[in-house]
Image 1 (cartoon, rainbow, N blue to C red):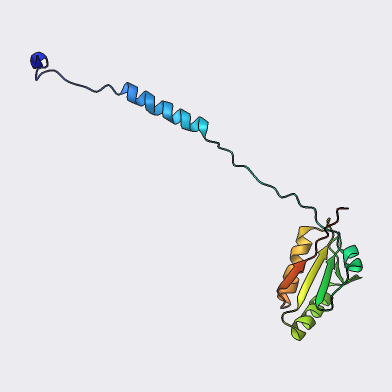
Image 2: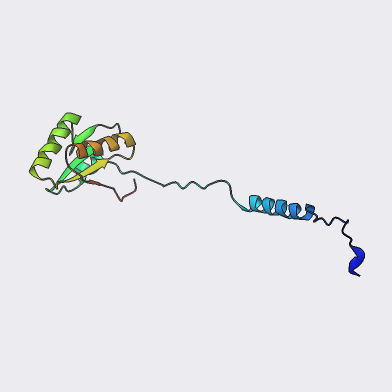
Amino acid sequence: MFDSFGDDDDVAVDMAPLIDCVFLLLIFFLVATTMKQQVQELDLDLPSGVRMAQQAAVDEDIFVLSIDRIGQLHLGATPATTDTVLRAVREKAAANPKQRVRIDFDKLTPGQAIVQAVDLVKFAGLDNIGIHIDNEKQ
């Protein structure tokens, strides 16, 4: 009974079914996975600035810096240059290193102007910076 295989006979394993299974698994995993990553976006509605600075009740301990929709800086509601703002912020920083600064901006203000205003305040020595957000939809 065991004599049917002799020493001269070659025994081989058939690899074709194994390769077929590997390819089927590869195709399954390629189809089952998603290749595209989802991008999440924030729905932002930026507040209006100069009007809020004029209407808001200003605390005495908050320094208000406003930016209009074209990127013009304002101290409170009066237009100001970068040098004027820098001098005013440095004076506030010398008087009180923990001075609170609030930045108001228009919802159409370019983002670059907002970043420059924050950098200007930080360069002048103050880092307690907040942004005033209007909760009312316009």
